[in-house]
Image (cartoon, rainbow, N blue to C red; front, side):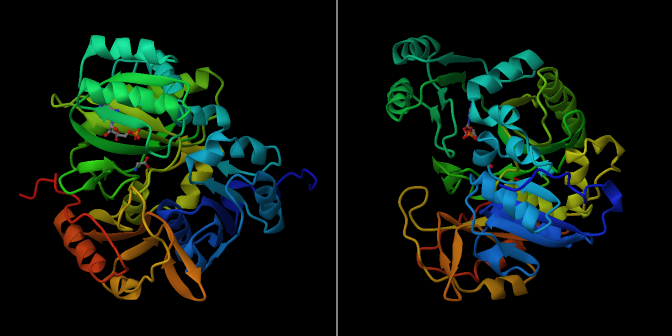
Length: 438
Ligand code: AMP
Ligand code: GLY
């Protein structure tokens, strides 16, 4: 491997040009790369491994490296004079990419392996929530099916069964009946999970607050709403997310202030007390109860997807400036974030069959026509093959449009989405249906 060297291009606002590496290959990573390239200081963005969209975006280049190939990522950072690494997905964070790259004095946006446990282990996260005293669902952790089942029988349904470990969005079963909950316990242990969290069911409206943090200070981005279910009216199976909008009108400035004070700040303070170096995004998946009280459902250690595709197009402050302020623990010196007026909506165009089995390799057309309407088309599961753009995943594209208000953004985003075609395309026609249209 190469010698450890002190990075020679890491000195705050003196930097004339910044090269950034975005780790990951989803719509979130395309949105991060796109937003970084809007910054006057960002001259080039690399993506590893990236997708068809990052391969063709001006100023962006894909590096064919797996997200867990830390040694090659470190080598590429040095070879290309990259001054900042932004980690998209939870997997490399939970495997310790930040700890690894920091050993080579590489500046990384994303928590260390210890911090990433907040997403990688639900039981650990619950312990942090308890220590921080933040409002959340009552929960117990189990390592044996019999004890988990006895607890479920005692509590009754509805009840939530959560796998303790990364499960690509498939580890949470919101069980309406006892039978379903008991079955979920068997299934999750059979799948190889060794710990489960059984949690009280909370009802209300969900919102995602993605907060930037330098380990001490917290700066929330605009609140977003994700539609996780595959079907219209938020029905059917859970997915990675079928569409999102920002700002979520449910979160008033007063409520955001309460979320910061009662949930985000105590959590970061607790992580700090444990000696955890958390510099990145603390993603709060919240439920707002019918009484208007925010409760934390879960934490993620990264930007949300598709929320990021709706939030970042409204950002006016250069993204690199904010991310570097987190990495350099200077968030308190950062002026308030500037946002564009209005709303943004992202529609996810998925492969037919998703979130179950689906086919890949379908020709995608209409992206230019969609972009001609003013929308931005972020790629997720796409690849370029012989200059042809093909589907290569379940969630294929995230089409985002902004508007001076929510209804304008909705009208624009669907006008753009209708122009896109591939065999089996599926998207929800009702993203944003919960927003009051009066
Ligand atoms: P996750 O995969 O951890 O993001 O959770 C998936 C979804 O499960 C969340 O977005 C919620 O819709 C739902 N969920 C998680 N915990 C609870 C809970 N305690 N009560 C009700 N729904 C929950
Ligand atoms: N959109 C949900 C997530 O990023 O986990």
